[in-house]
Length: 177
Image (cartoon, rainbow, N blue to C red; front, side, top):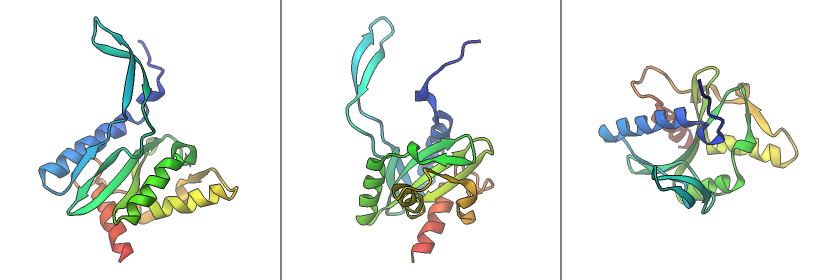
């Protein structure tokens, strides 16, 4: 059996689950969230199969998803991790800068983490990420451990959605009041 060796396929399971959740939320008129495609410029095409075989990124992507939840602007990025330690190198400084600016404009920014070895989803508010980010910038750990995360932001299984991130958003908004 052939195995694909591609960094580009990482997180595709998580992305599919989030996309399906977004469809469910839209059907129930709970949220309207759009996947933001990463802009690419094709360099080489396989004309017989109509496929791009070589391309480059036009610009850095900011977040994976953006939209509105009951009138609240939201943006988030989905990240997958196979261990209990999440490397901050999976997040880029331009993403953090965009998310900070987004929240300064009245929106809510967060990360959806999937710890694949445990099959656990986690809603990571930007303010919580910034604690780890600033620690790293001051010369501290370049990662964080699952045990450092706030327990209330683990996402429940029983809500009927693949990745019930609105549960995390609701809790996040309640803590802001």
